[in-house]
Length: 158
Image 1: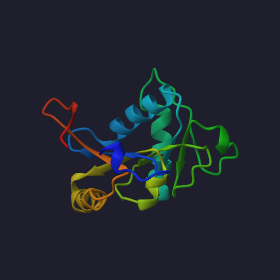
Image 2: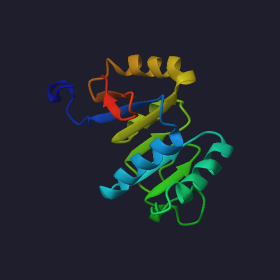
Image 3: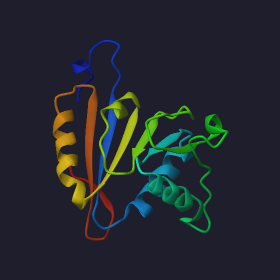
Image 4: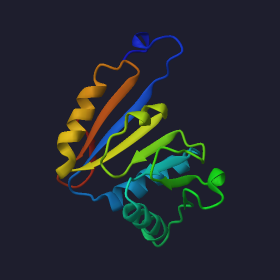
């Protein structure tokens, strides 16, 4: 993406596609969330299903014994103060400019954020490819595709 291709007043959005092959979401998402918070930013994690939101809430409390990642679920009473907020929609009550789409479903409204982390598993590759292609002609969107190598490390593939 070149800056000249962006219309005046339009801002660039970074969209990172994370193809979960070797590392499950339960390991990849906390790593991304930690980096976002460590950089002083806020994150909104979106999952449509209540069951997945509850599982993500439990995960962020217990994924690593030595780590603490302050977070809450939307509607918990203090949403505006949360560095990480888990929600069913793109309601960034915490003022997040970064969003993680944790359920594999692309949402065009995610482009209202500065950075999007789109996590998808092997069984979600067809809609992820469709989202990738749909974003190709948008000059204000910088796309990156991440896959895991044989040792499980993330490599930028596109």
